[in-house]
Length: 136
Image (tube, rainbow, N blue to C red; front, side, top):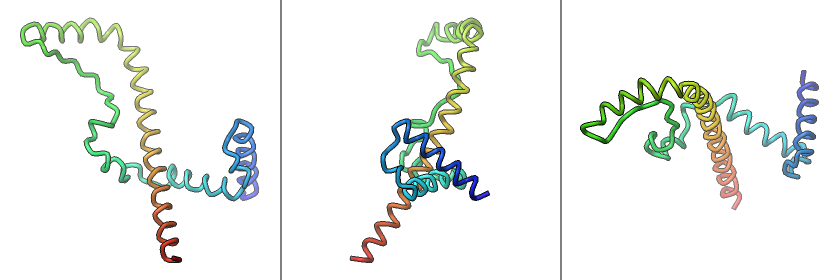
């Protein structure tokens, strides 16, 4: 099983290098280390327990909003405008909303994984700094 994984890793690395991946990937150890960090972030991390969203602050500022909301700032004709949007505009454009919603959900998943990757790299960086400071 280990041999199969190694073969797949070599093939993936060769394919990436052909596409223009960083030259550092020619070193199998560097590639394996990068892959290990990314796999750890994707497979073993709880993406809901990540520090970066807390650092970013207000969730409404950075999180994708997937709910469709109709509102109007007009006090008198506003309710009529909202009614027309819901009854006429929404049925006409529902297919676009559903298509976009799927893409927004996919993007939200990618964002959460990237947050986990960034945190994994930050943790590794902090550990390496601690080791370097102890040696000095």
